[in-house]
Image 1 (cartoon, one colour):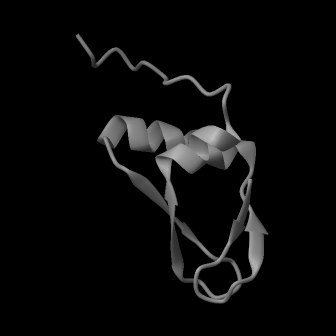
Image 2 (spheres, one colour):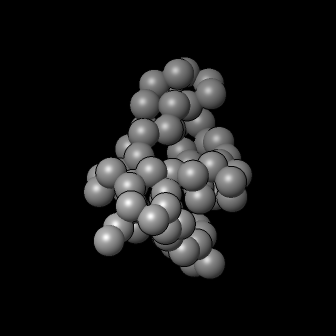
Length: 68
């Protein structure tokens, strides 16, 4: 997944593993966006759940057994 920094406007990529980890975190904590730090300027960029799901349509929530 390619992201363009909202501050320095330089592009950078997120791996599938990072996207899946972010989606797991968003699902577990019921968040609307994930913060990704730019590797160039170090500032946080908000990436919405919808954008992450578009990048990983095969992702399925990992059930930890806590939901009963």
